[in-house]
Every structure is written in structure tokens, then in C-alpha cells.
Length: 196
Image 1 (spheres, rainbow, N blue to C red):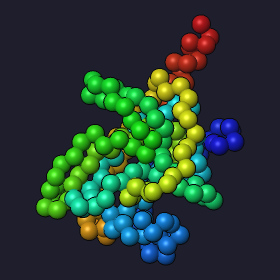
Image 2 (spheres, rainbow, N blue to C red):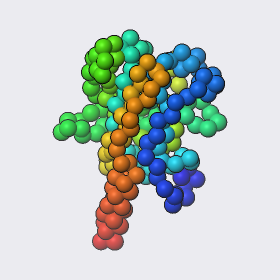
Image 3 (cartoon, rainbow, N blue to C red):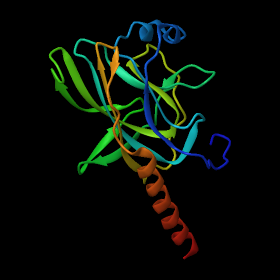
Image 4 (tube, rainbow, N blue to C red):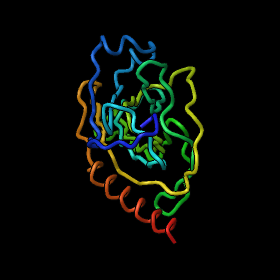
């Protein structure tokens, strides 16, 4: 957790949240006007800081004429900031430079319908919390710089579909189980290295 104590609760899978007009009102007008805004959370009700960055792959559907977007972390009592950290990861055998706020790795025009575009976005997450996929804000507070990102967990976490901004599609992945097994394997490997 943020204070350095170990988290012992359940790690919840990703969850899409549809924001009401009143909830959107507390954010920048750029977001209030974004019909394709998608809010999601993962982990737990508290911010879970990760020892190693986690590569998260998102599939997001937006109107083809919608403005550029990024992934934002939503702190409880502070301004939104770009989600994740900068880094490089091997994806499909190729090194991909990943920017804070996410990097689009693929697009499919007119999918799932004419006038919509499906984006595959990767983010190197340094914690689990609440996020938005929305239009790029004009000014944003940068998050803390990355630490050692030499080994990350890969989790294909979510599939977001926003048809006309009102319907949010199915999220896929068994994040809790995959994350749990990956962290256990990492812990046991590190423990063996330290003890030898």
C-alpha cells in the first residue's frame, strides 16, 4: 500500500464504472464533454502500490472522430495525473516504448461498427486504483518517475467498449488469479536468489 505496509485483502478484477453527469461535473470540461469516457478500477478500494510495474493491455472503443485520449489515474483528493510510468517492454518479441498515460499499439477502424475505432493500449502500471480513459487534458501533473522496471507482470486485463458513450462492454481477464500466481512466483524466485 502507499504507506509501505503489505496488503492482505482480496485483489479485485478490473471493473468498468459508468459515470453520471454529476460525477463527471467535478472533472475538467474536456472530460465532461467526452461521450466516450470510460472509468475503471482494479485492485481494491485503496491504492495498491506494486513492487514491480505491471504491463496492462486495454482494448478501448471510441468514436472514430473522438479526440485523442490517454489513461489517467484519479487520486482521491488531488488533480488527475497520467496513469502508469514510462518504460520499455517486449511485446510480441519486439521492444515497445510505453509512455505514461498509455501507448496505442494497434487500431482497427470501423470496428465494431462503422464510425467507431478499436484501440489496443498498453500501460505500465505502478499501482492499482481508479482510472479514466478519456480525452487528453491540456495540462497534467506527472506521476513519480519509474524505479527498476526490468521485470514486470503481464496481464491482459480489460476490454472496454463504449458504444455511443452509454454502454460499456465486457471486461476480460482473470487479473486476481494471474496477478496472484505471478507475484508468488516472483517472491519465491527472489527469496531463492537472496538465500543463495
